[in-house]
Length: 221
Image (cartoon, rainbow, N blue to C red; front, side):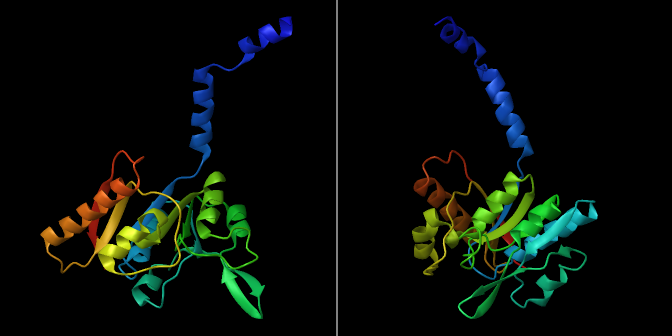
């Protein structure tokens, strides 16, 4: 009985628990997401530009997976970056190439580039979705740069479908509170402002837990 009375005194204080949580958070990697309103607006290009800037500043940057979709200007930004070979997975008489998650964790760069956040991994992969690969990288203390279309985010799928009249099957789970939207440079300032405002409102309405949304409009390349 005396031991039971002493146990509460041995419990960590709230301050100690907060400090432990802070240390654990400091050890986790940081995530930077490049968001576009639709495919082909330059998300991957902007991500690679940022990666090149970090590389020049001395950061250890490694490409886990990047899809250039045959765009020469995007492919040119891979020059100088270390690109890990992809993992080959056999499925139904086909060979599918996916990001080699284990190799990337083992390499443990400061920043990993992981394109197409909402991608569905091939059967036999450790995780069914790429965003789960990203979560594992972050938990291992690796910063991640990634790109995603707004309509791939599950909580916004219906809203974006109404705005763009495009339906996308693959969706990711999660919420965005700070986004960069790449837009056609030929659009007028007022039109761009209205589109960004519409996306900000959609985020707030569909995700009540979000307290603040900051939208940035940048011209596509």
